[in-house]
Image 1 (cartoon, rainbow, N blue to C red):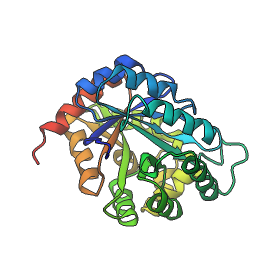
Image 2: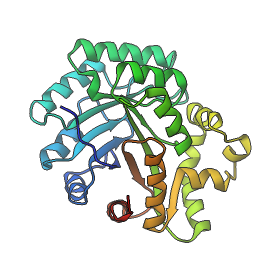
Image 3: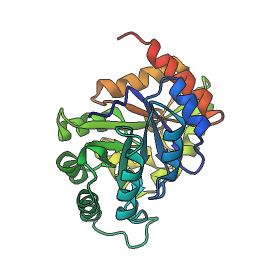
Image 4: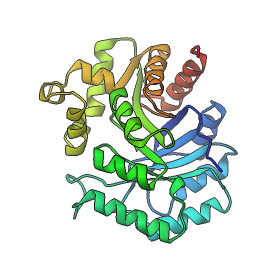
Length: 277
């Protein structure tokens, strides 16, 4: 069966996500929770959230192929889906040269990881790849349900949709911040984005879609911050999310920046549902 994601998902740090958070998001109409920051291969957090809820999908964003053993991840997938069929996605990714010991040949490493999952009986249509560049996007098109991305814009989403075609999932994630003081919101956004811009594959992807060194280096341009961290009223944020959907996204994962993330997610979800069309 197809997993029903709806239009909106919510990003929560895997180490901090609670059953109460998942229940609140399910009640707020979210279709998925994406567990961020390299969840462990035992998937215990995903299991707890699924046990506490009745409908919401849980996915990893993402299992780091250098850290999360593929055999363990496959066994965890089967353990969980025995009780919660059609509610779990395995998002996997190649990590980063700057942070992962032994990092080399990321496309080959991800392909090998996919081989192990497939041999262990994990269906390809339950696996998503963190795919930014052309080679990883081709791998996602050939061997996974689609792609799950962060630090992207509608331009990247258009390119991902073209690369994957109409039958695959394109699931971008976006930072959001409810603050109508644009200068303050941008400074908060800069603090959130700055560590990512020091990672080569994120920076390279942003250059591919039209940003320059002037955008990417301190003080970081307003146009880049505005693209990566949607801010303003809940309605303004919702319009930015709708731009991703119009660019070819099937579903947008929302990462609330700042205080009271669940409150922000509730407000954004309500605003998206309130837009016409």
